[in-house]
Image (cartoon, rainbow, N blue to C red; front, side, top):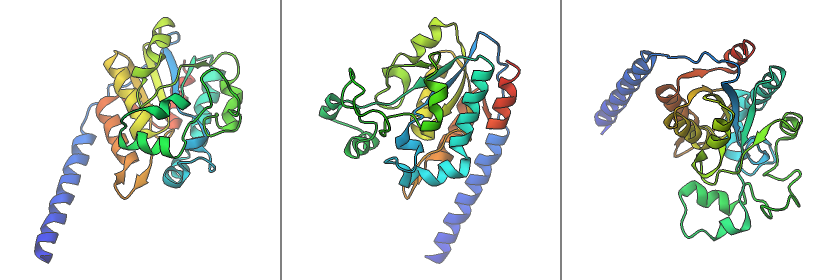
Length: 246
């Protein structure tokens, strides 16, 4: 039994090394951002993901802190505003009628169970201020400035269920700098759909985070897929440098 386990560990290590080498050998097409064509898109910059009081902090908090995610998202917002770069927020809201769905995926079921992103009504902000669905307080000066485009909410993970792509197209945007929460769910799903829709996408890998649980490391999975699919993957430092040339 011990010999079999040793062989299994050896095989897994060999596979990991091979995968790492394959990723390292991938080309990096890059994104040369241009004024009028580029926007910053941030998914779910909300309390339930990014505040210690949020309902998911127990599973995402360590990764948020390790990546400096909160501060890195703010750095991107601050730089975009200073450069007059368009900023789009793709939020996640659930209204009472969403809790009547007849079937759900695993994470959808969990989000509904814990009241994540809940709002009382699509037509009212009663109880919204300071709730789990609200923006992190430090982001409000950037998001509530009257210039940021807040799209309709996505309902599962990707922008297929909201108007993000329409809003980007209507402004002539075809290059996206992508950040926000959560890495292997909404952020990755936005990346995938934007790529399918013909956008160049640069993902900022330390301006996101994900759950790390017994079932798997969501962040590690997402970063691998960012590298395989996006035009480029930046750190916040690299993204800010590129944005300052906008």
